[in-house]
Image 1: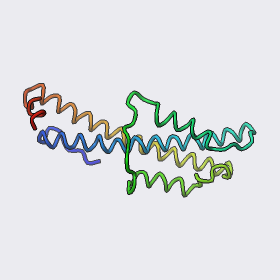
Image 2: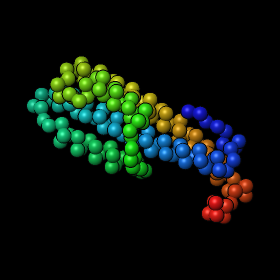
Image 3: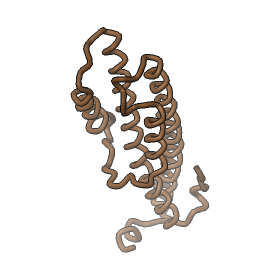
Image 4: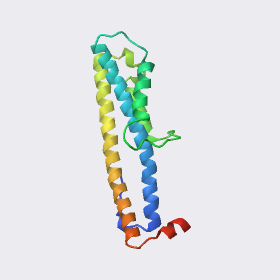
Length: 162
């Protein structure tokens, strides 16, 4: 991530960069939750088999997993993402799933499930690390905005009028 020094940015650049990063985070957050949900489905399938249960329709497990990831979670629920077409991060998640047989989850061998679990875990960690870096930069941008307002370098009137 290319992170410019917040103090070197004009007020408009500072706001634009902050908005850009927040919009990127909306997509990253959504894709991360989808990756976590898919990982939960892989683990649920592995646990089902370990318990010796007969195969159930994955869609029943899907409802439980998706409701916990896409509607619950941390205090700030994800903002809606309207279009993930041509989104590199979403495409990479889909590629990992396609390469390792996510669409045929119930027919994967235990070793294939383990590989898929490992790949999804690694993907989710990379996305989480990227997200953490983005938050650090967002925090720096926000702190600089607060400093400028506090020190009188920027005014609320300018924000409301401009």
